Length: 309
Image (tube, rainbow, N blue to C red):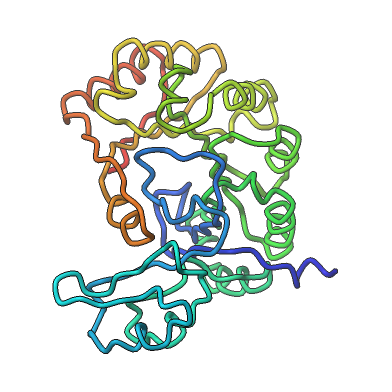
């Protein structure tokens, strides 16, 4: 099969992104992740399968979704509006197809590499003038390594630079093969917690493979300078002095140069609710604590640090 005919579920393409790598970028959010972070800000992209998502504020109360659902999974009440019985719903998307108000819609759409790049190349002038490009994110790119590898190659043929965004939990060989590609200029690598127990408790998986993959990329002179470590910071979870100092020493050993700090936000809670689940609410570290962490990494570990709010 011609790879251009292969399709993958894409949650969205975010144009004019300025926090997903250098310059102006188009970020491609793929669906499917092997981790289940309790604070995930894109929880609708965890399940690799298609899902139905609600946008309650869009609903005009026409009742078309109730009438058209072949499984009888949709009801409507004055108090709650549209209610979806997820146990009955088979994600046939009949309701979404008829909902012109976009109150019900699929989380993602199947797209080919050609379709993705047709959109991305519209802003190539911005990429060229700002040293930007496309960022392939998720979900998790290592769940779709073959597709992403081909996407990188095709983007390169069009002169588009690529930034990879990964949690690092996946096939090491596939990760290295992608990282070594000449048109991959940056790698955003997540560090949820250097403490394995904390990592397991809050993401659903241990961090051994992740740390091994980070060591692998950092040990190769061809990839170490591409790395930008990304640290979500959640108060009382992964912002303790012990965890931060262990992390800093680890970065020093590996020769890491750049870190982005990402304070927790609760935007994922509404998304999780709208795909039929509930997400625990956490707290953001105080501004003072964020400043302390930034100063520690800058002054003691000699890192380039940005706080992305």
